Length: 356
Image (cartoon, rainbow, N blue to C red):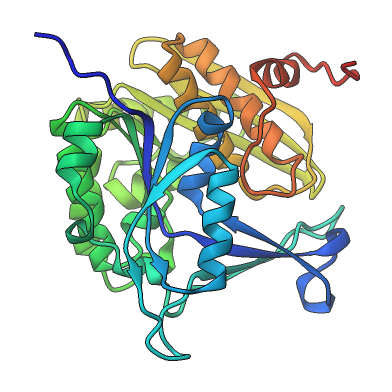
């Protein structure tokens, strides 16, 4: 029996918002000129694939008649992404709106500062009742569905929405990618509920991404043994922990984390660990220049998923992911906008020479 080809390379459920960034790398609190960008962690991830020509769809929610919603829709279209989702009436000036992320870039010895304003966020209302999941996943289909802990923990409704999406997508042959993205403020007072939600999503996941804290606090996995703080000890400790994750969640095949040391706001040491369950690719941290660090981790995940979609081996996937993250931090947007694969492979090889 032939498998029906899937319409989308990737589908991401998300709550879209805007980011306000001061001009000229200035601190937010003493700036009066700002650039506004449309953003979300999950759409940031999907941008690598969409810019490199793969069909991507965003499942989200909008505020009816809002100029900010209009701005976000235009932005997603410019990123070559399809989108769908309900439009909620604002109802009054105190009603629904899109989240606002207030974030400067930092400079030199001054680190960036970020404050999220999510009061009344329309994405809190995301629900499977507002989407035809049977059409989206059984008739149209997606090779990969990417979920993150930010949308999964946003509200009780979004937690259920992510569970519903993961269940239907898995039943219809999608790979599930889950970036755990633990946020203490999201989990406060919901620890038991979210532990169950994250455990179920992880049990259906083929790709799990997170740092040591994410795996411990989201999934209750014992972390690395206390010991040396050198790179080799950190890598060995993470490998041991992933062994425990593999035992607890045998459905997952790929596991990944990034390694970052901040030398200054504009200079980081950037590395990564990726395994496909059999082989490990360890990228020891290398120095990269940073214009704006926000979105680097999402770029890494986006590059990893692109490689998996292309059928590359773990080494090639990891290196492309590293380069995708390194690209994002040279941009003012939170998401990668690669011109082509060659641009990313040039970053990996350390070739910053002009291309004419």
